[in-house]
Image: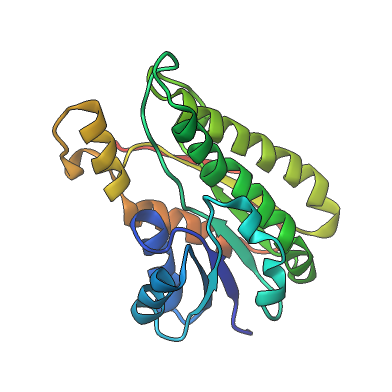
Length: 228
């Protein structure tokens, strides 16, 4: 079996880091998106042999032409990177609103557009790591949830559009997961953080890798992961 190649966003921490570790340890080829050269150097040191592609999700325009920097076929595109900044609709600032939409919604859509030709060649898989906030919006989560509801729409449309091209599209909806982002959320909510209350990031990562390993006769459209 030939070596499989995956482009992963958000490999620096949390769920994305665990996904990258699992794929790296089994010998798959990794292409890791980094926001700048400095971050890229850190990822290259952590994952020897991985290729690094620079592109800032906070600046969607920086992703134009990125396929020219990704040589060869691509078996999967795994969107894990995300940002959250809690605020009520009454208090949300334009910059925070736009930042979450850019990173969580616009950039994943544009990155997918750029890389679709490579994914079609391999009849590959696109995984959007969404959130249960993409299913239900709670108070103070309007901006983040709006970005994730939108991401679900992108995934649903893309799945129908690319079925004839053999590209599979999966949305993974993790609920609260023990990651640095979750610790940040607890701080914003003003309550103590106990990682043992939430799903382990490696459990979610295992689910994502399972999605990538589904035989070619089938695909998983959606999966939700919640702590017990």
